[in-house]
Amino acid sequence: MRTRAHARGHAAVVGGGYAGLVAARVLADRFDRVTVLERDAIAVGRAYRKGTPQSRHPHGLLSRGAEILEDLFPGLRDELAAQGAPVGDFGFFRMLYPTGWSPAIRSGLALQTFSRPLLETTLRHRVLMHPAVTLLDKTQVEGLAVTAGRVTGVRLDDQTALDADIVVIADGPHSRLPAWLAEVGFPEPRTLRVDGRLSYTSRLYKRDPSNGLGLQASVQATFAPTTARGGVVIAIEDDQWLVCLFGANGDSAPTDPDGFTAYAATLANPHIRWVVEECEPVSAIYRYGGLGGYWHRYDRLRPWPGGLVVLGDALCRLNPLYGHGMTVAAAHALLLGKAMDRSPLDTACRRFQRQTRRILRLPWLMSTSLDQGWSRGRPPATAVLVRRALLGLLERIPDDPDLFRRFLNVQHLLSTPLVLLLPSDRRLPSRRQKGAGT
Image (cartoon, rainbow, N blue to C red; front, side, top):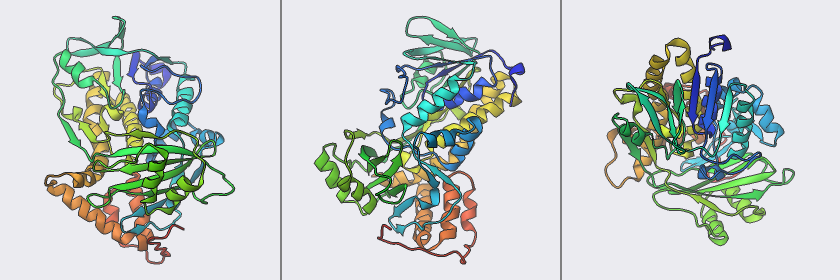
């Protein structure tokens, strides 16, 4: 890590959400000043922000992402736990696939469940404790400032400019970076899109820790092209359940209470049905649609301007069902820091942007290969092969705890998919629970 004695100049981060905060933490050890620019007003305590409508729905942090955050923010897991975020083992996260229930195992992978406002508020507090970091909320960025082909800052909506040695774009799925690049003479990136026409519909319920399901989380996955409905229930802070009902291929749960309950009743997962039918609702019902995946191929854009990088949902959005988004953003922030430590600034920016694809390839392949099964057209051969291989794995997982453990390590970006080819340790007990919820 670069020491403060070697810090250089000013970094501007566009976007004060999760990805922007993690990037700001990495940059704070490498720059004299870091300014985070956020268009929303930031409340003092936990609050849902207008700019992140997805924050009312579940967010997953896989083991690799949790490790990175713990390195950047030592004691973060304990701090979240002290605020009521449950911690358990991911192997006991009950998963109902089309082929049956996952076995309950001790995976060694920590599962901590929380609301997005709790995570963001905690990270923001930690980041702003760093003396190098300043947050400017209610600040709208309108474009890039460019001199001689290099980004030198950003233009603000009050007609002023903020100079910076590096600009990090982390302003989410509605980022206008492609248009900003075009305005200053750079080509727009090619964008890959895969749309499974997915929607989330969520509601909070009161949770009695002493009398409930006896579990932390349970999910019923969608699976193209046969299973368009699914859902998840997770225990979060403030003794609450967060229930989210999935709809793929254009299906979606209603936002009225009776319709929401009726939709949940169509699921095979008894844990979701129990919470919806037996627990007291403590919020309105919120729907978030338009969850198609995309990848702006900035890694292939030539020329790439010095002084600019992009990460988070401004770069790529993955199907949230698979939980990769937050982990990929954290891994990219870590990659950015390493690039800064190894190369001069402009070289580091270009090298980082090219190398983002190394982290994205596997999550993109895993999520889009399944989502392409909802397409009316003929899916690519690669997607067909991946889906066929995954279905074969899911057929074996209910009876093969060792395979499930290796599958989790791949999902959590801790192992290569090649480990799935290894023979299973048949000494481990099997707990096939096809159609059972206990």
